[in-house]
Image (cartoon, rainbow, N blue to C red; front, side, top):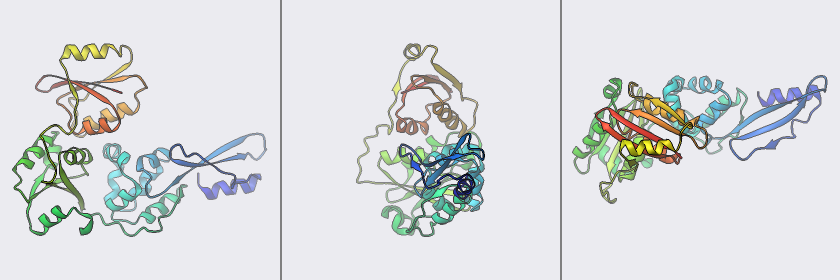
Length: 321
């Protein structure tokens, strides 16, 4: 419900719309107690206050009409209508990020959201946000590799379309990239989990949006030591050890099988289940492999992961805090 409508209600019913309190514990909201026409009851209007750093997921949670409002700004933002990509990307993308992806201006997005009832804090320093990073924003080694045409390409769209995880192919391709060259990974969305993994292994990265493709560049930073250890650790156990750990959550675990799902549905499904997981509960997952893309997401959310590999295409995971 918008600010203007809230002021209209107050004018009609005699309340003070300026008497607003701020909830600073999460996304900022404005609250107003408004008596109804008969003065017998009251209703509460919640107006979410947003700025360029507000996460898209928080905005959509408050008002799902924001999906269409944002998607209508630019064709590059129509991916937000896809529930799978939305669930993967929205929690990580701010309004400023979305403006960059959509080749739009931060304030244009804020004004669009204001039109559906959000209280917005305009960005006085905002300028048009190009989808491709400016040359000065790109790490110098990647910029130099691009200028010298020292780039090797890997298009993972066919791999994803076939329902296969491209992680191993990407890692193998990185080993074949000559010194001084960058690897260009062509995808349909920004591979945030992959970027986190490779940054921990000493790689520089940059992302460009071109038409329907997202180009992610990786460059080995020779100034960072990579001892070959996994970027993300997990506890590898036998099935008996995993079952022993699961017994601690008897009656308090959810079971999900993602083995027959196409990429990126396994990741989306698991993260979705974890969002709804009650405190003190665990998630037991039947998977085809150790989900490398998922591990940094679990680490970021402070989850512990136990994994038992029973054979090709059969991995059991127990995830809990």
